[in-house]
Amino acid sequence: MKQAFTARVFQEGNWFVAQCLEVDVASQGETKNEALSNLQEALELHFEPPTATIIPVNQIC
Image 1: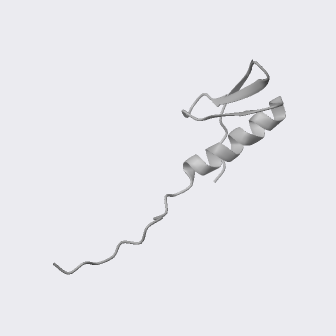
Image 2: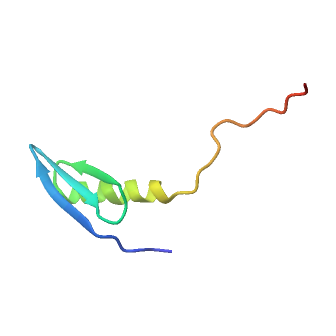
Image 3: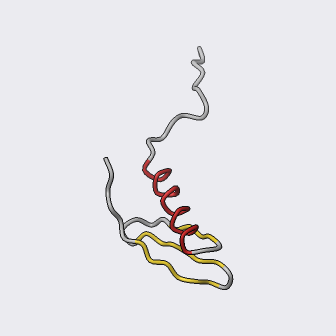
């Protein structure tokens, strides 16, 4: 399911910062388009279901 979010883009020094206004996620890039693309990727990762990185080991006490 796709959902639309609002982004604010502003420049800090040589970088453009893209910030999602509905979710506390931001990213940056050397251009506005790169910052927005990086923000899209960051949002996709933010909403990705978590997966275990370490498989639990059953221990017998």
